Figure 1 (tube, rainbow, N blue to C red):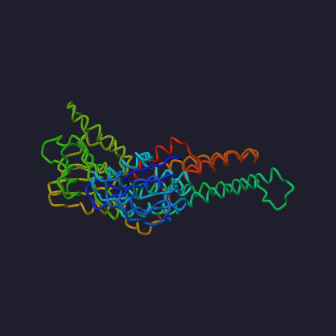
Figure 2 (tube, helix red, strand yellow):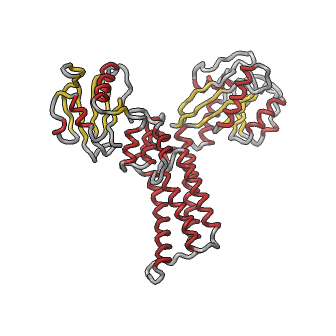
Length: 449
């Protein structure tokens, strides 16, 4: 990180302003080369200066330049932000001048990566920035800000502090057995401490998985045979003609998606192609996508036609969804019903008619109930909220269980596994990391972040 990086931090297009960010040891000197105004190398930190960006004797743009001197900056390096007019040509020209005068184009997420590597934030806080940028709902924003302000990190730090205290006492017992003030670490004490750790890990994992679901939105797949009304249900939910609806079986040959906000949570609907055996190549691809949508879904709406008897195809489809969280939708309830629902009496059943809009509000209420979306304002959003973090928590839980399973082993050998558990939890915060992991995480950010 010895070089100086630059990138456009705003969306380039026709706008009032754009911001170009520069970070690194030479950032102030480089910007000063192309700035006409005060000598930026002599100004105070956290000040803004008016002037012009120059290409030799040619004025390129009228700008405001903000100076931030290390270490009290976003990256803990010298940082300069150039506020220029929002035209594409102007912005690109200023960036070009920075690059020709000693800057390197920043990689995606490199500014926040430097903030992490320079110790200003930990990995949970860095990932929370991405959550804030991508937040589509107020609840997703709240989850992101909890991570960014360090409240989510505190959970993991407390677990690691408990472990390091236990490790320290074990080592004192081993190295200084004559030290009477030290806590005697017995196998029973280790068992008590690790059981408490397992209880906390299970609680954090459970609540974090729920928080991940709320943050990312709930995936709802609408499945069933052709022509049972799946596309009509999607259109009514979205209040738009998103999917083509006809009386011809197999009209939907690809997945059609749309979303609504329900109680502050994004509900992502996927209308799938009707599932049946077919020789049509295009329709067969659609059926394969439908099966994948079932696999990925948090909730499946299994749609039946109330005016028809249950068929072999219906039962075959239901066999693919019965182990998911599922609601049975009996559509066309405004017409004479001949369907026998005795095979589904253990499941939630809702009767709908898209013609008279019956049952749709009941269905929304049922989704709210199933995912406990009615009391989200009372939820504690300080838990973890991405798949990487939750995966490490589960690995940590396995390590904790391994410690319990070694209760007959000598204490000094058990300590090795306790240290492994402490190190594994450190991966969540980025206390230990691999370079390729960091590259993957920060590559998901935009260039100017």
